[in-house]
Amino acid sequence: MILPSFLKAGDKIGVVSTSNFTEQKYIDALVKILQSWQLKPVLGKTIGPREGSFAGSDELRKTDLQEMLDNDEIKAVLETMGGYGIIGVIDQVNFNKFKFKPKWLVGYSDTTFLHSHVEGMLSTGSIHGTMAADLEDGYHAESWE
Image (cartoon, rainbow, N blue to C red; front, side, top):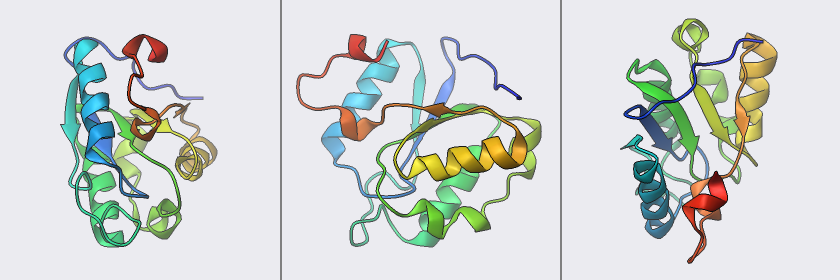
């Protein structure tokens, strides 16, 4: 199993929604937590747009994920919410660069499909973990540690 590098202060973390739209209050809470850990959140193009229940069109969600996977400065990619949607774009994502420069992929629900792909096809570890949509009012950063 290939494991991406551990994160350190100053690392850039991509934040994307490859499935359902996520309310801004949850994105804001996630950004605050990442900054408190001295990480630098980079919001993807899928943060904000909405098409039905999705965070933008299939093309936008695919392109956003691809750009985060290919960006050498991004050390991890956090999904904001699950639902249904990544299955419609996963076959169009090119993992060639990711294969040689893996990064942590974090989320659950629909993101499990992405985990299965990188673990099964590329023998690369990922994190089945909490997402922005889990940040209810009053949820504290220490709950994520």
